[in-house]
Structures are given as structure tokens and as C-alpha cells.
Length: 108
Image 1 (spheres, rainbow, N blue to C red):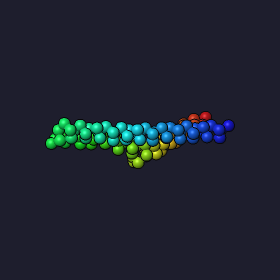
Image 2 (image 1 turned 135 degrees about the vertical axis):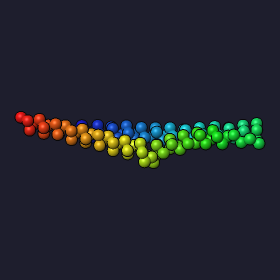
Image 3 (image 1 turned 90 degrees about the vertical axis):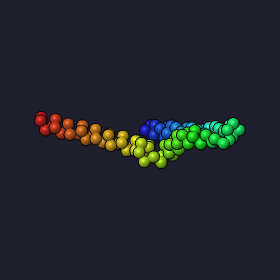
Image 4 (image 1 turned 60 degrees about the vertical axis):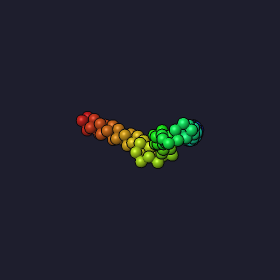
């Protein structure tokens, strides 16, 4: 029964991961498409003043951060960091429970 739950959990994690990757590629496609549109509008409307770089730069930072998070390249606050912190907190809580048990048993 536990193996079935573990496999189901792994399947759900895999599906979630695929959705995150699809979301990133959708974000990237929108970024490219909209910035091509901005470039065309900029060149047609005011070719001497190139302003399309600014939204491209700002949004590009967001796309880059999204990609770093999805592909787990962020050293801080990535999935590995979160999982490690969760394990650390769980271990700390278990140690505190054991210390309380030991103190309680020592008094009896």
C-alpha cells in the first residue's frame, strides 16, 4: 500500500514539474512574440529613438528568474534549498521532542 502511495506521489510530482516547465516555455514564447511586436512598432513609429530595449530588459529579467527557478539553478530559495530546510526543521523538532521526553522521564 505504501509503495502505491509513493508511486502516486512521484507521479503527481512529475506532473507538477512538467506543468512548471510548460509554464516557463509559454512565458518565454510570449516574451519573444511581444518583444518582436514592440521592435516592429518601435522601428515603424520612431526609428530614431529605440525604446523597445527597456521593456525587453525588464521582462527579460523576469523570464530569466522564472527559468532559474523552474530548472533549479537558484542557489537560494530553490527546490533543493526548500527541501533541505524542511528536513532541517523536522529534525530540529524531533530533537526537541526527544529532549522533552528525556527530561520528562528523568523527573519521574
